[in-house]
Amino acid sequence: MFDGLKDKLDSFRSDVEESADVEPEPEDADAEAEAESEVAAETESESTDTDAPTPAAPEGDAEADEGSDGPGRLQRAKAFATGKVVLEEEDLEDPLWNLEMALLESDVEMGVAEAILDQIRSNLVGETKSQMASTGDLVEDALRDALLDVISVGQFDFEERIAQADKPVTIVFTGVNGVGKTTTIAKMARYLEEQGYSSVLANGDTYRAGANEQIQEHADALGKRLIAHEQGGDPAAVIYDGVEYAEANDIDVVLGDTAGRLHTSSDLMAQLEKIDRVVAPDLTLFVDEAVAGQDAVERAQQFDAAAEIDGAVLTKADADSQGGAAISVAYVTGKPVLFLGTGQGYEDLDRFDPEALVDDLLGA
Ligand code: GDP
Image (cartoon, rainbow, N blue to C red; front, side, top):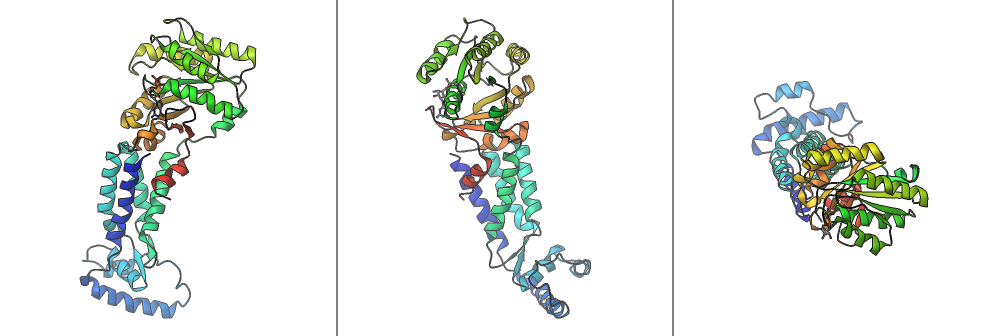
């Protein structure tokens, strides 16, 4: 899972290491000598503070450094003389460019890639490290914070939400056909059962021929009841019947499928709005394929606009080496990724854990 992206993130670490872990250039020799004598003088006058991080260059130093490549040059040489290295914007320019390309190649949405880069830049520029410490560690921390920030947008405790809600809890699944929506509903029934919740399936996909049979197979395999109407019936009415059945039979959760026609279809969107009105689902989960990358991100936005989603499930993450959708969906929609589908079996549904994902991406 996400192996291609892992490799690319790893090269960012070594890129920064290479460009930052170089000694000041020979033409810096004067500045270095100057810095050394200044440092010696400072050490004499301020015998405390020697372990503190090297402070930013005072204004006077910056002036003294005028005409050189940049105001940080003296600061850098000075830090070097004290056994420290200051990361400068120019150290990061090439690695950040490479990282941006890597993220975009991995189908990370442009705005998300920029947010990650901005955060890394602001975390790392001016960062002082001891020469003994690895630049890789600093970079890894910055990368970890930046990824975590975008990936964990909107996260909430799904189990807690189910536990707290009045029963039956109604969960409606939206998304286009073929992405694994029906399989996800079946996996969710299994997942909930493991948490001690009973569930009933309701097939709101009354549009597609064969939809009832497809979901019935899952219901049979799982020993769950399916509520279904004739093809062409009213999807909101089916899910409503599912809720009534759950109320009458003390079932905890209603899992409602919906028709997955093109998200641009106003008819479909009208259907979803009607379901929202008639059933008022406790949760609306958008399902799409992790492998669909930016298309999945776009569809998530469009479905969210039609019938507000509470979170997303990304299927086929087992086949996704890119990770773009997993990284982008939450930041772009403001709604969290809650589950990853990781295979075709009923047990292949994992709670999405941003920290675990970031650890995995960074090979921790
Ligand atoms: P729907 O049209 O959206 O309801 O899609 P289906 O539930 O029928 O799934 C379409 C195909 O995707 C089926 O062959 C599923 O077994 C497969 N599928 C669903 N989820 C996953 C997943 O997480 N990983 C993999 N590898 N395949 C999946």
